[in-house]
Image 1 (cartoon, one colour):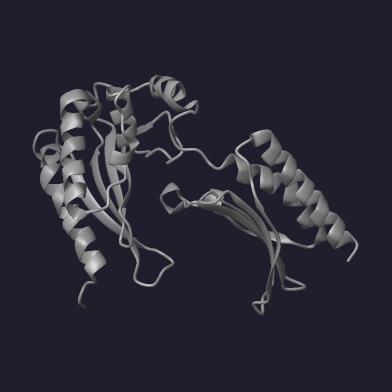
Image 2 (cartoon, one colour):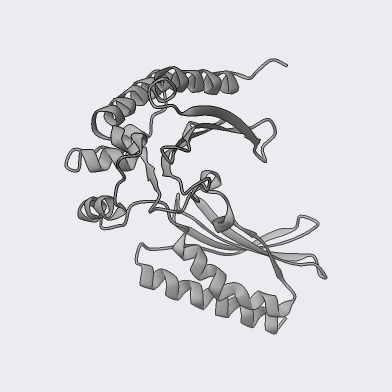
Length: 271
């Protein structure tokens, strides 16, 4: 079967990674694997390029998606044969984090969001050079980085912790809308439970009532800070009940979520 243009481009980028990471095999004794996982979109795939060394207790993982750029580039500290979870910020360091720690004053986050094929390759070469020059000990197994070091730089620059975290607002939404279970609804979707590489700008939960075929989707879209409550049935009928642009004030956001949960519960109770 003929490969699509997107798939051909991703496989070419994987080959470029492989040719420039060959030192991991030749000099450090890593083994290489390439695995695929089908996405929910027809024909779309995730590619997982992994370099693993059990003796050094390290794994490098590069995750790409057929329909977009690479998703993640990580170095993991293993414990025996156990590979840390993607949200294990103590035992996982991403390449942008290494760049931030290396260049705390000149760090440019935009260089980690590259689009053209030529710039992708330039970026790969630049980050491999950074690893070889400053952080080879991490891959050799003789060095690891305290997450607090990166957090300190991140706090100084942006006032937030570094690393990967499940969406706090969605956790608040789950807590406040849990009352739906008292009315026969069951939680059937929770994007906070998705693997990190499947996360998007939209965080949502869906509650479904198997007896009435009624459903509620509660979501927040960070592309426009849009909080929404949607009602739909198994027949596809849909209605948007609430659409509200949140502020960036967490206290106000959480207060609003509580008010909306109370509003919806009162509505269901009185229906």
